Structure formats: C-alpha cells, structure tokens
Image 1 (tube, rainbow, N blue to C red):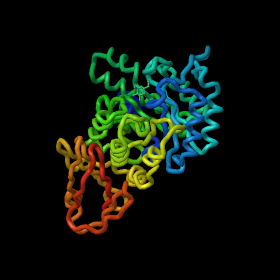
Image 2 (tube, rainbow, N blue to C red; image 1 turned 90 degrees about the vertical axis):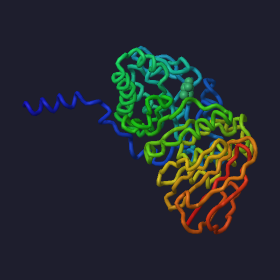
Image 3 (spheres, rainbow, N blue to C red; image 1 turned 180 degrees about the horizontal axis):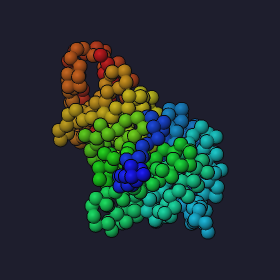
Image 4 (cartoon, protein in one colour; image 1 turned 60 degrees about the vertical axis):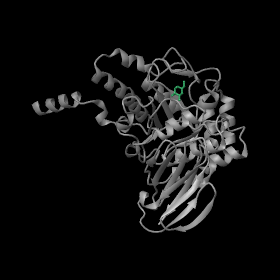
Length: 390
Ligand code: GLA
C-alpha cells in the first residue's frame, strides 16, 4: 500500500509532458500541402477551399507530393448550447467539405488555439479541448494547427516563471492527448512562434512540427531572416517531428523568381514542412515549376530526415548543406547581397576528400566529376542548388 501510494504521489508530481510523445507514424517526412493564411487571411470560405483542392490536383501539385489542404484562422462560428463548436456561415458543412477533399486523394487540416480566442478573434478551444478534438475527428480532419494567440495572455498572468513555462507546455499536451483520444491520426502542428525554444520540447508535448519564428511576410527580408535564422536547429528535427519556419510565399508576388528559388531551396535544405501559401487557382507556369521541381522536393522529403545546416556565412554569402539518405549532399550556395557574387565551394568543407559528381539541380544539369572545388556566379538574392555525390 505504502509503495503504491508513493508511486502515485511521484507520478502526480512529475510534469505531464513526460508522458506525451508525438504520433510517430505521422509526418514521417515534413508535411506538404497548402494553407489558406498567407494569401487569403481571414477571407476564407468553403468554395475557395474546394477550388484550391481542385487546383492542387490539376496543377500536378498533388502528384508532386502535396497532400494537406489546410484551413487556417477564420472558419470558426459559435458554440451551441452543449458547447460544441460550429463553423461560421462561410462553411455550411465541414464534414461534406472533408469528404470532398478526401475524394480528391487529399487531406484536410484545420486551425484552433489553446486560448479563448484565436489570433483573428474567433472562438478558440480553451476549456473545450476534448470536445473540439472530437468534433474535428468526426468531421474527418487530418491536421490541426494549434496557435497560441490569446493563451499567451493567460501565461503572462502567471508570475512564477517555472509555472508559466509549464502552463505553455500543458496547453499543448492537453490538445495532444485529446487528439489521441479520438483515435484518428491527426498531425499536430504547434504554433507559438518559437517562444521558450520550442524546438527543445515540441516533440515531448506531442508536436509533429512547431513553428520556430514569428509570421513570414512576402518579401526577401522577412523570408531570409527566417530561413537563414534556422542555423543551429538541425539536431531537433527528424522523422515525425520537424522545425517549421512557416508557410511558403512562392507565387504571392512579393519576391523575384530568384528570391522565390532561394525560398524553396532553403526550405528544402531545412527539411521544412512545405505549405504553399498562394492562390493555386491562379498560378503562372513559373510558380508551378518552382513548387513542383521533383529534385528539390526529393531533398525536402529525403527519408533520412536530416535537417541541413549552415556550413559557411559572411555578410553576403551563405553555404548550407544537407546529408541525404544515399550519402550524397545537397548544397545551397546563397547570395544574400544585391549584386552577383562568385561563390566557391571546397568539397572538403562538406566532408569529401576525393573527386565528386556535381549536379546543378535548378539547371537540371550534370556538371561532371570535379576534383576539389566548384566555383560559380550566383545572382543577387539567388541560389545555386547542387547535389554532390562521391
Ligand atoms: C498567427 C499565426 C499565423 C496565422 C494567424 C491567423 O499570426 O502565426 O500563421 O495562423 O495567426 O490568425
């Protein structure tokens, strides 16, 4: 009796997160899909989501590997008398929408917050976590982005730092456990902007991915600050649990083609989740080519799941490398300056002490077997993405 009591007391005094683990069968590679936020903001509705699902298929993006159609903030309505959350009148039948998305061979994602209100001021899941998880599962939801928003105010009220940190973790554990209880595999996406170094504990609260930064904007400065700012985080990512530097802006119009090429190349080297954030129903051939380059996507989705790292950086130039499952290296030569730069890569700096085969991925061109180094001109804000094989 005494023994049992002691054990029970010990267990109850341990932080909850000791017992939460991410669903390992989910997000074995970084999730890919589309999300409504970057282009549509709160102006999202059923017809738009269906049109994006249609375009995902007709553009070839589904066949390239994009799976999730994610509704971000702005779908939520009121709770009914029993506390069950209803969509607003822009989403007449969420289950029917999920069926439609599923019928296209795609999956449906949704958005909520651990706080009473979402960032857009809509109803959050605070104190309704289990109920909402059940609702999402009943609709056929496959992915949940759980955005801190107004829960941050609740944390700020807690003056004790240790308890505040535990509140933050517990908010995510609570929803993770509620999702698990539904029995439906639902990818769990943490969004708390990197607060309290979430990469160090995101997997322990059940996250399959966690945002590492604030919101991306459709300009080079924002994209580069976020993307190149991921240096040092590679050890925290792996199959089932990924660093998330936010959704893509490719195709939204605020960057040049070279800059968007930098964006998607860097995200691929980072093993980042790839969520297109543009309007898939209005894409130029160039945008489709950027989003569906099979060799770039293969780097992102490489089964070893090893996030790339910064190998070299000065004010103008960055070199990033990622080890792939077949022992080759994907390497990005990035020019952050506003004029063309010659960049030289010494193969010994990425672990090769013998001649290597070099392929330029965006040019779709084998450059042959090279001895010690490769030097090339890289356009302003551009990238040369290489695959290097011994
Ligand atoms: C936060 C998130 C964004 C988006 C909005 C929605 O800003 O970081 O990605 O989900 O909320 O309101």
